[in-house]
Length: 315
Ligand code: SAH
Image 1 (cartoon, helix red, strand yellow):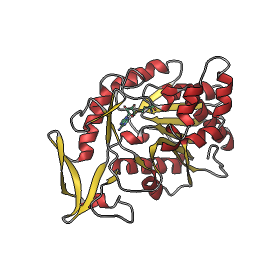
Image 2 (cartoon, rainbow, N blue to C red):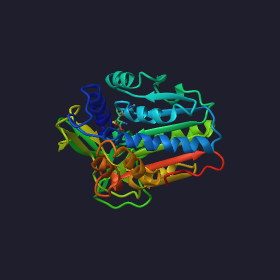
Image 3 (cartoon, rainbow, N blue to C red):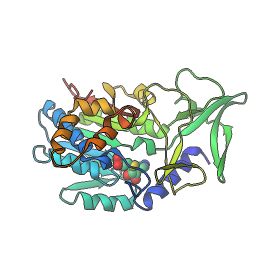
Image 4 (tube, rainbow, N blue to C red):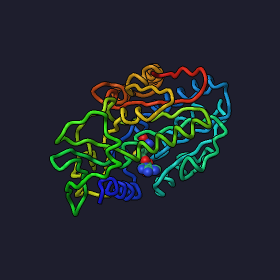
């Protein structure tokens, strides 16, 4: 089986099961760390909406998890912005969780962008969504380009499919692992096509790198610890680092990228923390989100947009 097919299955099975988020679960994401994260995205959306002339907008989220990010965003924007909200989620279990978290709002669950009318300007977001999409691993050896195939509890290398090589960076070395993700590329291309008709922006936040390079970043996490990718299929969260350079190469729209730490600071997260700290201590949460040693540097924010005279906040 191709590595990507193995990942697809394992990830679907994993998210269909028990709630993996939070301190009791397997991992914790930025919106689950603090409400400040979603509030800053809400402010970012408000700024863009004002620049677009305060239209009715669509907000579309891929992989909303527990619905926490959208709940924090809507708390910030729903009083001023006329918004239609669309969520795209694979896991039926998580859809139920999202329904409960967002019961105060009018939300549409859809299967994909094709189910959404794009006459309104649209803002498409995804936090830690791209890292959950499947990848393939390639290596050039004396047998030519090989791709990683998964067998019972392990893997082997086989001849690489021609098409996969088109996703490689322009310059490559031999005998090292490269990661490519046709799924991520397709997703970003679809967003771009959608935005070309609707106007608006895509905002994707994830861990990864901004200059394509080699390296095996496939990882599985269970109970906040790394475990064997192949022995825990369906039971652990399988992800890989996002090659933002590969995404940038196929985006024709104006685009910008920043570290999560700088992005959040530019939007004023420290001021928000100051206000919140009058009621509770949020310094550890703030540090986790913005410090270079924590999520601040590793996590990147990619935005691409279609519209006249837009100057993005946060970059
Ligand atoms: N954005 C949330 C959750 C991140 S985890 C947060 O930041 O907390 C990844 C999410 O993407 C989960 O909700 C998972 O079920 C969903 N997901 C994974 N692959 C998907 C796919 N192909 N289509 C739609 N949702 C998917």
